[in-house]
Image 1 (cartoon, chains in turn yellow, blue):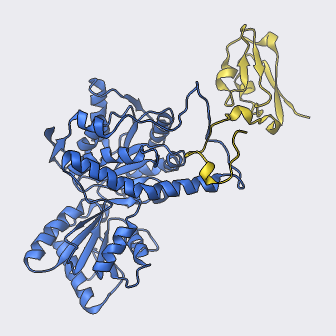
Image 2: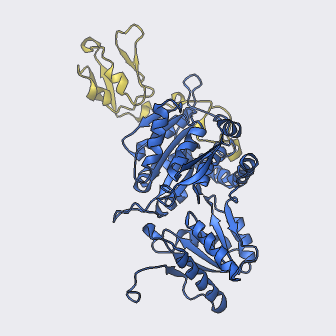
Image 3: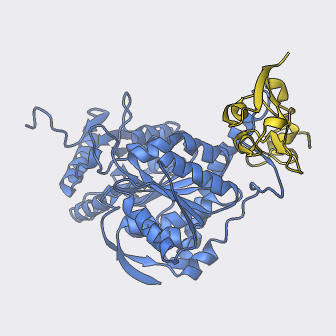
Length: 94
Length: 395
């Protein structure tokens, strides 16, 4: 995680992490429910992608559907609630 | 330079144009409305190249300013009273994120009952938010203080938000001739805002992340404390530089008037200071040695200045246009606290005056000086006194 911080003298002026972004901070283990996607039902409206508060939905480059970033998805379920085609369901994590 | 007859609100609008604020997000509230109306005119006519964001509340206004400052924009907003109180949560955010948002607050009483008149409870309630606080006495000072606030707030050694206040109506709606400095003068004084770090998709950093108790929260708060302490010298430095350019200097954090040989001194913040000056000139002609110490900056507090004052004057009256229930006037408690470490402490009396816009007349001020002379002679009668209060005895 970048340079070793020993005292307040080593800190940036503001609470900013320079070397890393939140990408380095994996929050996937916080999940109790996991979103599962059924590509055949998907209307490609990307509403889930717009609503995801953790930028954990990636639209595939060929536009054929989405991929979940399970390293960061916290399982909030907003995507499943918003999906008009009901192609996302939340299932309990083991 | 142009000389215009304007009020305190318009002085704030002109200042925001002169500093070339890039994003203005504001919500109207009496008696601040004219500030943002004029800015909207400036932006609509193309005279001011800024993004004017119409928001649904003061909370959103501050959130928009924080977001804009995060990407490196110079931001401005203005509010008053209930609006400032609604912003409170985000005031902490702006200082915690070390974003130099600059704001004007029109000092207005807090409801209920509704009152739109002068009272400093709104800004005093923001004491612990980590904002630099300037209090203006005149329309000219209002314009200058806004420009000075940017200079201090954006200094890379400071990076803290700042607000400048103006007493409702006494300053917000009172017209005075004001020197509007040339754009070039302000451009030279205040270069474009260059933050140390900004939100940039091409150079990503982590913002607003979490800190556990064993990590860096406490140290980051310490850095704010250090920056606020450093801002004292930066405020004085900016004042000096501004004086060189304009000939105007407002006396630093604590603006003293005829205190050198004074027997008694009144302390005040805001526009009542002008009335006090008039009374001082009158009483001085009668041979009474009276003085004024005007708190121009409440945060950072002029602690050293007050200690120096306490060494030369042994009877001090602190006037508060606000109150902290269960204790006393907030300016009073802070002045007392600053003087406590002195070996020989002066006698300090609290006058609560002008609450909710109650007029502070020359007669009122004369009465207070009389009282201070009595205290000097025979000691403190009572610690706190509500001035011109309608008591059963008076009726």
